[in-house]
Image (cartoon, rainbow, N blue to C red; front, side, top):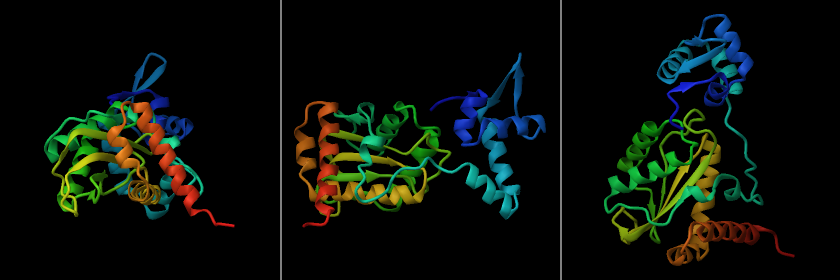
Length: 243
């Protein structure tokens, strides 16, 4: 999301704090704000600076309380639960992702994430994904990459989500099997737990089903989404006890 000025409701979502808690901070003049008539407005740059300074100055107990109040949105991470239908929609998909270089593909994938409206910090995500790729390529064997930043913060995203892009032609992205990469997922997770679950789930989907081949031939966003949902269900069914 590209808001530069927040209402109290938007700030509540951004900080994952109750609106009443924000009103109390305003009353105590402990948070930067502006009064516009009867309403309140909060400038994002000032809020980001305030949040960083506030956290650095908190005691360990205060940080614990703040973290509890600002926890990420919860998702069912059980083995039998289909997660992708909760976190992927048609506008998360780009069948004609442009880019022949790693840098261009990363930037376009971040643009795709930004277009969902669920990304709060575009530049932060871009820097994080670039940092992660410079450390070690997220490309897997089979022509797929699972892009992600090294840290997973609830403040960066409105909720956990995934975007998928397919380039017109495979590109050099550092796959361990030496193959070029054509399928790109960008994982935008609010915390480490859901990130690791999602990373494992997508890895299994890509390597234990024929979804990548089917995605290569798919003609529309809707078809791609259906293929991914079906592949996840296949993984879930294969993990159920037989008998």
